[in-house]
Amino acid sequence: MERILVIGANGQIGSELVDALAAQHGADNVIAADISPRSLYAAKVYEVIDVLSADRLAAVAEQYQITQVYQLAALLSATGEQAPLKAWTLNMDGLLNILELARIRGEAGKPLKVFWPSSIAAFGPNTPAQNTPQFTIMDPTTIYGISKLAGERLCEYYFQKYGVDVRSIRYPGIISYKSPPGGGTTDYAIAIFHAALRGESYSCFLEADTTLPMIYMPDAIRATISLMDAPADKLSIRSSYNVAGLSFNPRQLAQVIEQNLPDFDIHYAPDSRQAIAASWPQSLDDEIARRDWGWQAQIDIQHLVKDMLKNVKLSQTPESALTKAA
Ligand code: AKB
Image (cartoon, rainbow, N blue to C red; front, side):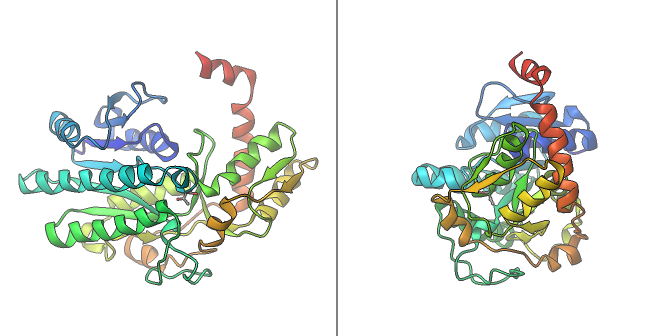
């Protein structure tokens, strides 16, 4: 039986991962954890954990006899640029604490499987932007991207040196409606739906033709759990896997929204996030993820837009606002 700890459970990925893991393993076996004293979502078991506290992590791992940990607490690309030292400390020390926990528990005969998210932000301006290969130039320009590249090297190091079973995905921009995005450069692709459904003209902080790799949340959750469930001997990558969903730019996304909401209007006011986006890949080669653990994206832009419009609309109803306030 697996006992699973999700750190950063109140965040964009964590909130949906907790539900998916609870459906798979039973709600009692999923321990949602975050720094806030209360769970923002429907976790059955919730613990307050600061991932920077190694002692607290060790105590919770022992209390629940944890066998898997998802370490999702991080500062993203745009907020990271506002507070680079804080981003570096949280992103690097948080990961190191988890890898050390897994090493120590593994040496004590209590193995801990680890998931840690990397990102397309680990690439940079000299990376080939089209069909970006798994192995290529990586010269990230943000503190977030630098922490992701360093984190990938740490993951591989702990696997090679200590046998820690660590697994990772280089997430594209993740689009979802259940919880707000957390301060990333790809967040425009969520904010645009909220503006469209409020009947507002959307002011896009990226230029119209800025193509980026994206993935819809159900595909992202499926990728994450498939990788964690894959047999260890099938995995040839212990840094982080390229995983492609779909690629589009703001103009293309706006056009599909307009097919569904003919009055929708967008205008462009690029800010500092434009330079970050311009340094990232436009599409990814995920051949190795397909080969090793059978990855295959399922959700295209038409499906994504229809589903986002339906669900963001529901979240904007007065009943939904009342439920949130309660
Ligand atoms: C961000 O924009 O910072 C994140 C990411 C691509 O990792 N969504």
